[in-house]
Length: 351
Image (cartoon, rainbow, N blue to C red):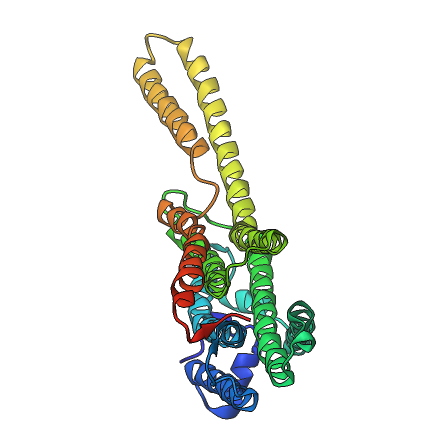
């Protein structure tokens, strides 16, 4: 896959890997997934879990990481494309020349790369603290979870860091003078689509995680799950609006500036109309023209006050609302599969 021109401000770990290996993003994702699956096969062989009965709990722990890793690796190119479109959209509304735009978007690669590796390291540590692979009765499963689970959380933290850096660049550019056309907000909708893509990616990861939840009758465990996944869902939804805050502020600022211009026009037209009224009926034609102008400015002011202050349209809001129900559907499906269907089979056991 070709590199997106709008994302040439820095080279990510992915970009560097592509340069060194001559592989595409999809091929790199495939290689990483195959390595994880190979580790899984080796772990399964060493633990001899293929003997009957099938340990469902074991497979849930073993497969959660590879599934989410594969999902994130496959969605990253899509997010890059959306980010590229958003960058092009910002370029179309910022009052700046080509060279100055490129210079303002350049981030120093060494500093960015250090931040990437720091995010990866933090994700690895936090992932292992959450999963606690050392508490597994099988040493081989523990080693496998330390690698796959750590890699999963490292990938999540790396993604969050890249989103943060891109959002910082957007905010830096949107603080410059803008030429926003409130009659056509499609350029700014590209930023909202990028933000929606990020939220849907995290909601997809949460949904996949909930598919691997084995039902339990322990109220404490259920409460713990509700708190954790509830917080994750709220965080994913909050990302949508957090990433759009700089765009929202820019739109509010541009709207207020436009309203100030309208107010000045109304005030000037009103003074002219009052002055002209003294010469009635000699200036009836001019008064009629001023009255029409006054009415036009009043109508425009009314429309401008009702103009949107967020770049998302109705379809995006609907997609965001729909994504909230995906984890619920996944939870119900997990309950049916793990709690109702599989226990009916004598070869399936839950440890």
